[in-house]
Amino acid sequence: MKIRYTFLSGVMLGLLALPFAGQAADGGDWKRGRVYYRFVCTDCHRGGSGEIPPTSRSMAEWKAYFQAGKHEKGKMSLNYYVSKPFRESIKTKNQAAAKFIDVPAEQLWKDVEAFVIRGAKDGDAPAKCN
Image (tube, rainbow, N blue to C red; front, side, top):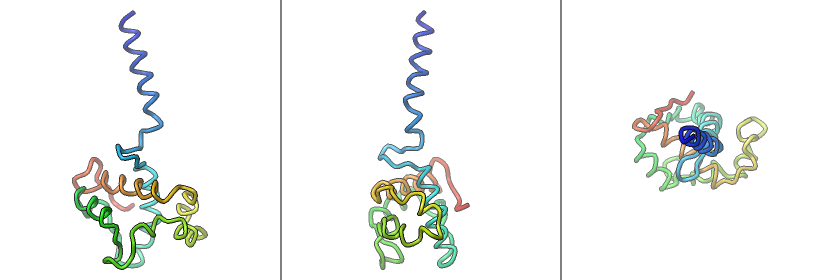
């Protein structure tokens, strides 16, 4: 009887954790962040300065980058690229921007950050752009 109770407790705990499987401790959903990064961020970088895979930086470097919040060598706020106005401006040509149009910018920011930190060269799952 005790074995059955322990087994059922483990199954229940596992089922409770499923909705949070992609979420980092800080509330970022790295899976959504991966989609946004690959289809929005990488889309722009292909035409400009070239792709910037998560493995191009360490976890500490990505954390510092997000903390500084500067993009294009300090010319633009990094927040702009997850903002609803930005997503609105590209939604007709970018399906990921359209798909996540109603996700609050603060959440999308955490999602992208969770993905690049997880995918950093010293992260849990080093990731390329494609």
